Image 1 (cartoon, rainbow, N blue to C red):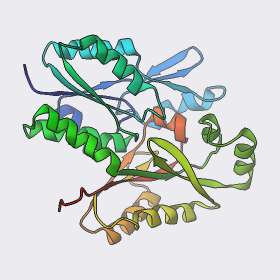
Image 2: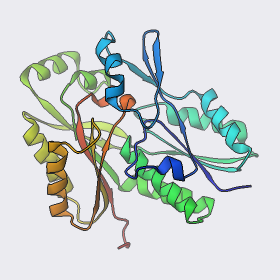
Image 3: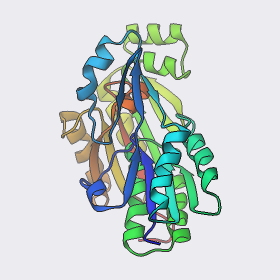
Length: 287
């Protein structure tokens, strides 16, 4: 059999351009749905490309995960060329994709070793795990070592962000409808972190400049970082992301810093104009 194959889902975004063209990674699409209109997401889609779907949908579009049948179809196609698959997906606390992947993998017991990994993250956080798996495969690592590397990164991966529309948090059950409406009226900006794969409100601020400061303060708590990724809603450097990169570089001059945009399916969770930072802490004992 040939080399290890990697499967992920279209919530993923990468810090390294062109990874999908160079590495054996298969992406299972999320589906954006607004009543009868649907759109299969790719890992290249920008929020702007689906602006009409967000603006014209009564309520909000829904992001539906790849079904068990779709994931089983993907695994079945890969089994023709491999008997080892690492399937890494968006946090199970935000989407049932991991559950669908585990159910689909049961159909291949005895034929293919499929290890499903809950990233406990999203977007570029998920992407860092997929990139690490792809790099390990390219380096000739054995299957168990690839899985160990990915699982070992999950506890070292941190995400903080702020959102400017509390209605999205209300849909996720993080605030009540009255809190969302009142918070939007007062211009409150919630600051959230990811804990065990779940978005947790930490505190509230009253301006985007203060929210930017909170992002920088959070990163300042780390001594050794392997990677920092600024997560924003648009592609290309913005004034805000440029400011954050400058501040982060001053604190961690030897840490790689990238800027990535999150896609439409993640926008259904955190809104259309959020900003955050993903921090990968350096593994203890590694330099």
